[in-house]
Image (cartoon, rainbow, N blue to C red; front, side, top):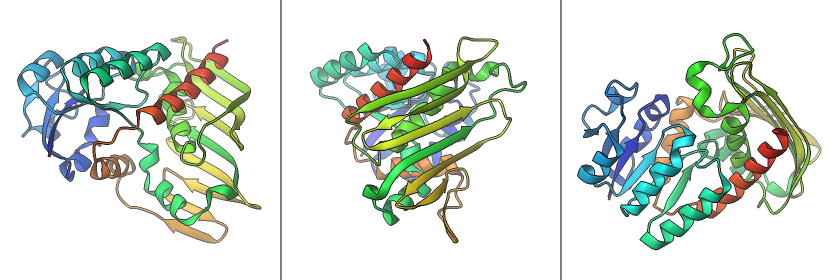
Length: 302
């Protein structure tokens, strides 16, 4: 059994609780946030609390840390934890600079620790059910649409969502990690990328991609302007379309409807992740997914 320290007690940390509480790998949770009144603190009221990363590392001495802070802070925190010989879990996206991947990889090897990305879309129950019922070699195209209510006026990104780095980085990594389950990511062809920028920051409030990953045609649209929360993928399977409704956790195949789960969607994602976690990292897979993310982002930013 291992101990884990959560760094960052924002909204996402509330969804970790159920999975971590049922984990057979982690037997003790400690938490860290500069704000003692952070939103998730009350869920972990029985856990040791630290107000700084340094204090958590020095006094808590966890076997693992789970970094759930804004993406721009991940590299510095991961580096500090690894140098203290602590294994690292990082909420996606893990880094926004390609050079950080090689630096962390070398450090992790030197200190004999693991670095794992928490890709929550891969752990959706509807995704697991799709993989259970359908053959990957019959998939030829995936189209995904993501709506998030992160703009009140449809023009500017809400202030508390600015640390997410915009619509493409935040949701693009989810979509790509999902598609990675279908194909090995040996080649990327970018046909078109379009970003619409927010009025209050040089960050996309909308993003669209058309291209090919290996043999799969890929299309996706991400939109933060419509005041709704909805995630849907359509998969061209043989000669028909199958809908994966991520939001409602169901699969619709013609007249057949597979209802996959009743647990709160994000709770289920992290429940599946933590209850199945065995300490084996996914760093090489993560590097490839992030490489595609950053290449598409660079193309869209031109």
